[in-house]
Amino acid sequence: MPRSVRASDPLTTRVPRQQRIVIDGVGMTRAVRRMAAHLPQVGMLSDDEVTAIVRNHIESKFPKLCGNCGRQYGSLADYLRRTTHLGHPVSLDDPATALPEQLVGAISYANCPCGSTLAISSSGLDVLTKFALLQWAGASAARRRISIGQLLSDLRQRIDDDALQSDGGGS
Ligand SMILES: [Zn+2]
Image 1 (tube, helix red, strand yellow):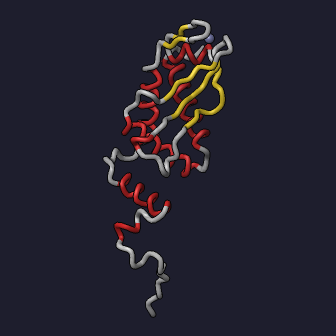
Image 2 (tube, protein in one colour; image 1 turned 90 degrees about the vertical axis):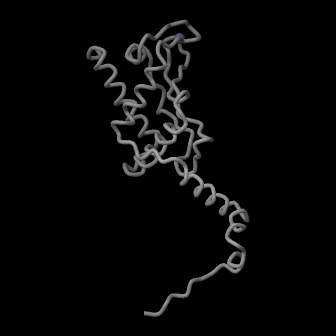
Image 3 (cartoon, helix red, strand yellow; image 1 turned 135 degrees about the horizontal axis):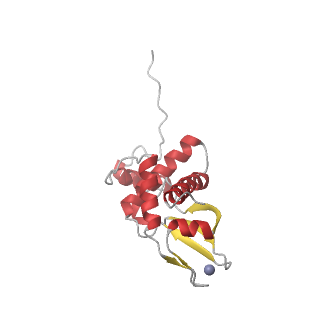
C-alpha cells in the first residue's frame, strides 16, 4: 500500500514549532488548550457527586434574605416553597474553552413573592471544583444531547426534590 502524501502548509512547515503557536488565533487557542491539559486533574465527577457538591453549596447560602422586602428564607426547602424559579439556571462558561482562572460560574434565579429576583450562584466554590463541575456539565450535556441550561435545570430539580423530601415530604 503506497504511503499517502500528506499535504503540508507551506506557510508554517518551516517555522519552528514553538513560534508557530503564536502566529495566529487558532494556534493560540491550541496552545491554551495544551496548557489546560496540564492543569491538575480532578477526574470526571459522577452525577451523584455533582448533586451532593452542588446541594451542599446551595445550602451554605442559607439563611438568605430578600434585600427588597426583608423576607428571610431559613433553608433551601423554605426558599423552594416560597419562591418561583425563573428559567433555567445559567452557566456563563464554555466547557470547551474555559480555563480555571477565568471561570465566571453559574447562577440560578427565582422570584420572591414581593416581585424581586433572587439569585443563587456558584460564587464561593473553589476554582478546581467549579472547573470539574463545568467539565461534568459539558460532557453530560453532550452525551444526553441537551443544552447545558436543560442539564442544570434537571440537576436543580433533583436537588429541589431531595431538599423538600428531607425537610418533611414537601407538603
Ligand atoms: Zn422579597
